[in-house]
Each structure stands twice: as structure tokens, then as C-alpha cells.
Length: 459
Image 1: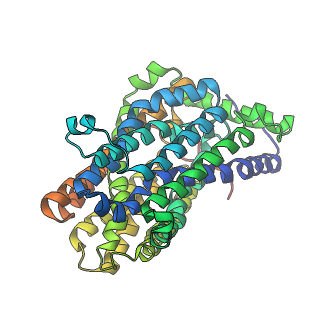
Image 2 (image 1 turned 60 degrees about the vertical axis):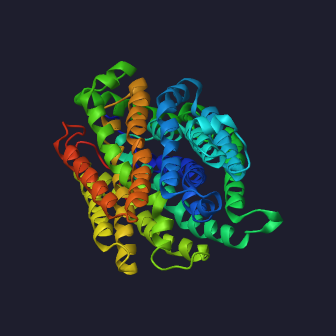
């Protein structure tokens, strides 16, 4: 389909308007989503000693989130396409906020013979059940947002928009790390509750509140956006239709079964798994890694402040890499190169250990900046050749299979730390998996048009 000529100034103004309306709010949604997912890393510093959780118990519990996430991811994303983004995203946020707050009761629920049957204490079983349910509740949110982006932005603009949206991962940690540390340190004992219980309560409630706002702020698509003129709506819809039509060059897929028949979908799911394993392993364990660099066991705020460094650098890196990928139209080397930076960081963590706090922080920064830059550009690969219902199913499948790495990564570190009292072997394993992901990306059959074939938006 030929691209209809439109006044460039009008087109740029339209997309600036759309970006200004959608991205800040989606950004806020993802901040609270990600914070609820990973604040367990800070809670662990106080909760694990209180409830007598070993590193293996914590690692398994942190990772079991992704089992529930995996099981319900594809159905959730397909439902979103059928019922509309607004109500489904609101449902997701409200339920996960409630479940996140319920973690404050870990250790207070008595399961009797049920917990014994699973060879768990009551506290362990509650922790596992709530982490699993949190994954079930949140399933579909991230791939749903990625799908939602395809309703508004053509491929030539999507990597930058996705990167801006996904800086919420970094910003949630930049903001959330010191806030989490402060809550645990200064709320500890208030009203007779430990700091980690306050952490779950205070960081879960914003998701419920913002989830309610989703109903009133988001529109299901450009045609329902009353804040756009008819000309702006038509332009956006036309650009998206042109983008979908152009996917026929790459064997565009349009139904659910077609997505699963495409070998590129399965290859990208493996790549996503390889990267996610390392990302969540380091993410869930970062507060512990930093605390073990010599920080006082009760100085949670200092742990939070130091955690800001890797996430702050990552926030800048992912926007720079995403914007450069859009400008050049090149995706594959941006994806592979970013993941390779993370691999170098993991190798450095394994080699440095606890011997040098400065080098360890630099290594953590390489991992976070590399993985976030990788994931910000990664999603331009599957959305380049999938459209329609296949996009909903394919994106969700890649994300759900890949996010199983979120279970194995934290669990791997926990088990190795319990067995060896160190993390070096785990980081070498994570680096090897990351390298596998790099190789697959570089060998992958074509998933993008030749750079320059898609006009990149000016920056």
C-alpha cells in the first residue's frame, strides 16, 4: 500500500499530541506495576530474617510470580483485544494492587495440613501463593500495552515510544529503591507493624487507585479518542493500516494459529527468555547484592540510594538506544549489542564478587542498562511481521515464554547461594544464557525491512 502524502508538520504535531496524551499515563501505570512486582527484593532484606526464609525459599517465591504470569498471559492479551484495552487494563491493575497489599499478611495466615502437604511452613506457603496470584493478576499488562501501542503508532515510531514507556522500569526503581528503603527503615514498628509489611501495603494501594483512573483516561483506540480531530484520527488509522499492509513483505501473520506456526515467534521467545533470566535474577537480588558490599544490615535507605545508580543510567541508555534504532531503522544489531553489554556486566559480577564495591556497582549498571536497552528495541522485531489477532497472541506468547526466565533466574541464584554461599556460578550461567540470546538474534531469519525503507520520524 502506498503511503499517502500528508503535511509533515501536521503529522508530527498529531503524533506529538498522541504521545503527550498516552505515554505519561502509561508510564505512570507501568511504574506502579513494576514496583509491585519487584519490591519483594527490598522486603526480603527484613522479611527473610523475620520469617526464616532461606535464599532458596526467597528465590523460588520471587520467581513463581512468572509461572502464574506464563499460564494466563496469552488468554489475557486475547481478551484485551476482544473487550477493549481500557476495561481490561483497569481490571489488571486493580486486582494486582489488592494482591500486592495482601503480602503484608505473610506469616499471619494458617494453612494447617495444606502447607504441610507441600512441605512448607505457613509463611512460605502464603508467600508462594500470593506471588503466584500476583503473576496471574498482572498477566497481560505489559504485552497488552505493547499491543495497544500498535493501535496508535506505526513501526517507524514505535521503538522510541516503547522505550519512553519502558523507562518506567528504570524510573520505578530510581524512585522506588530509596522510597522502599525509607519505608522499611522509618516505618518499622509504626502501629506495631514491621517495615516490610508497611512496604507492601503502601506500594500496593496506588495500583488500585490508578487502575480506576484508567477507565476514565484511556481510549480503546484512535477512533474513540474524542480529544483527536477527525483528520487526526484518520491519519493515525491510515498509518497503522499502511504499516499492517506492509508486513506482507515479511509474511505478515493475521490469526492466532499463524503466529504459532512462525518459527521466528518461537526463536524470539527463546531470545526473550535468555535476556529475562539475567534481568530478573539481578533485579530481585540487587538489594541483597548491594547490601553485601559492606552496608549496615539496618541501613535500608543507603541500599536504596545506591540502587538508584544502575537504574538511573539505564533510564538514559534505553531512550538513547531506542531513539537511535528508530533514526537508523536498524533493529537487529541494537537488540544483540544491548544484550551483549548485559552479558559483559554479568561476567564482571561473577569475576569481581564482593571484592570491589565500585566495580560491582559498575557491573550492575552494565547489566541494567544493557538489558533495558535490549528489551526497549526487542519488541520492534515481532511487531514488524505480526498483525491483527496474531499480534495479540504472538506478542503474548513471546512475553509469557520469555518471562519464564523471571522464574528461573531468581530461583537459580537462590539455590546456588544456599548451596555454595556465593553467586559467582549463577552469574556465569546467566552470562552464558545471554550469549545464546545474542547469537539467535544475529542468526534470526529476516524480521525487519531494509533500514531506510521505513521513514523514521525526525528527532
